[in-house]
Length: 108
Image (cartoon, rainbow, N blue to C red; front, top):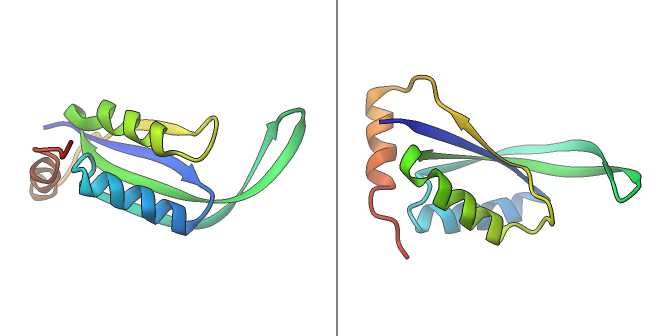
């Protein structure tokens, strides 16, 4: 079974927790990991922006990645969110099985 890791950034830990909880409850993601605040520097609307953000990593299966991305995009507070799907080259069999079981029956 093929796993995917979905990467996104969010404006705060609170928002990341809310988004991750909704995606896990919907069984589109088996797990979400929130990495501590970091500084993002980027050009936006003609100027250089500096924003503190957190990183949210979501574990899912290949079968659920598109639905997870669609839901994440709909729930995301940014106009242009960074949503990246990263292939998982290899995974521990027991962990991969757990991810597949957790996402096997998404809640509508």
